[in-house]
Length: 421
Ligand code: HEM
Image (cartoon, rainbow, N blue to C red):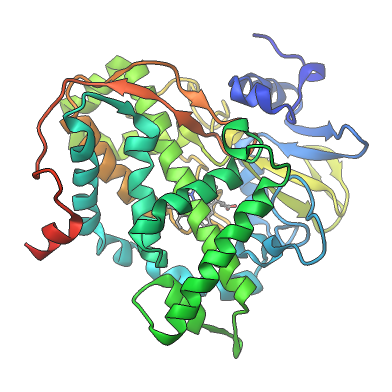
């Protein structure tokens, strides 16, 4: 498919669902890498499609602000929109103070301490399906570990995790009929439900502190002030969405890429431990599940010869930067040995660099190991069903089959049983 500059439409979500965005970005990088995209009702926004420009804007928070109007394409709906209090939508030094509140739980050391526990969880997740010989890779296998892990870390009981899954799906899938039902304001509706739920949990934590992030947030102070209930809610929402949607989609895209490139799968299996680290980075580059974040120009400036005006919207397309021919040799080839691999799937190294990168890499390593070493003869049994979105590169379903195998633990074994033993 050849796309002309006139044929570019980054607002057409169906084209993203059909995977046509890769061709649109290829055209833009070649012919108009800092591209002004018109809005249907006037105005427009800038699009950075090259790796070097994305990294520059991502690091240059003094010039390209997350706080001024948020990180989504569309401005806040109203003054007092709760998303203004997300740390994602703040700039240093305010951002630094908020990030400090949760940083400790995500350091390499804290995450390494979770490994043995999450490994048992990963084993039980594969145990639950291994005798069946077929499943939906998304709901049955790759969604579970990120969901269980983030629920536990933030303090949501496991029994409520499917509700959490439903809320985050509805927020991210608001433009997809499978998740959005008939409600035109699904993001708000799902947020309100999540907030009401968090309020109840937070009240419990205030009297009965636990070893979890919610307790830290309820008791934390920023410059002598306690967080407001809305700030606690917003934090929990950010961690739930960010902790869930991204790792799952990277794992699905990664397994799909391996099963579609049997030579790469065979190579990985020939020395699993040896190739897994570079294979995971390639899957992150390939999947790049956060397609873009937006910034707002703080003053008149210039990028790639284009005059950017103060207040202009500037989109940083991570998905395009990760296929940039100037940065990656053969960017459309899935190569598990790629090195170096300076992908920007977690951001370009600025202050908002993914808080959960260590956790995501641990989860990916554990679940890939379980899936690829235990599900013998794993095969695709259909095409991926894509999410209709130009923000998250999601896969809603992917049927797979394998030769049924044996559980490690007897049916009905729980994580508590294993940890008691
Ligand atoms: C493969 C999985 C993941 C990918 C690809 C990913 C990607 C990203 C990206 C692109 C950003 C923005 C970076 C920037 O603008 O500089 C980000 C921020 C963030 N991520 Fe992740 N993420 C993943 C997993 C996770 C997990 C498991 C968590 C767990 C809580 C998480 C929590 C966050 C948070 C809280 C932020 C905002 C950080 C801030 O504003 O300072 N992410 N992530």
